[in-house]
Length: 277
Ligand code: NDP
Image (cartoon, rainbow, N blue to C red):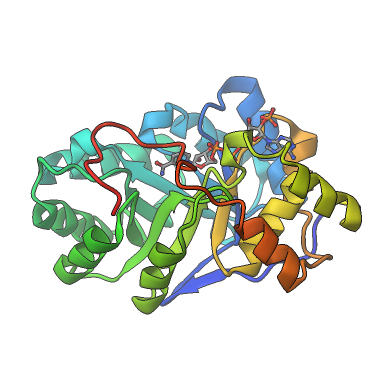
């Protein structure tokens, strides 16, 4: 089954498929089956990281799909302990080697690290792009002010900010800043890591459209013009999650889903992030 195409999210010359596959916690045979199912269902955007310990397997699974390399988009990252220039360079080179797919499409600083000068990190990131390790570079988990500081320091355009986003977490301010600077916003944990799928409102809207709550939430992301990377270990769910092109949520439904946001809605808040603004 192949889903009809969804409009990509565009940032400068970068076009990123709106619905991507998250691979955190996926390994071995499960990962291989999920990547194969995703490719079959029409996913062309795959998200990994050195921290997930699965870049080698993601690369092998993608090569096994037989898809032409230029037809899909691969994101990887640099962990926050590797943000000095030499370490960032080594991390990027190792990722490219493990994936075995040529340059990655997007290389992100995974989390900020206040102990490392941002200027050093951003210069090394941009150098990795100039040296052909990555076609695009960007950041992840950057607040509004940190993103603007990074943009001011960057010698190359920063193409994306990948951040937690789902109906329980209002990110409208950060999304507006991304838009103002032409930075793609990529939502991670788009299903709230699965925690919000039993919300009664989502069940109600899903039933009204003959869809699953996950499809409703991913459609909510898509209609905002933001990208989303969803994960499932279940190949059937993987295929369902991208099958969202042929229904639409009304403005009232969009607003009711957005109203699920709450002050304590953030799931990922590790102690090395000093504030989110
Ligand atoms: P998601 O929001 O994608 O939720 C995944 C969970 O939802 C799993 O438990 C999955 O269970 C469940 N699920 C998925 N689809 C369905 C469905 N159709 N019906 C019912 N349950 C479903 O969570 P993640 O936290 O994994 O975030 C997605 C990706 O974002 C990660 O995999 C990673 O690539 C990236 N990420 C990036 C971070 C960063 O710092 N930059 C931080 C965290 C994540 P099941 O497997 O049983 O289907």
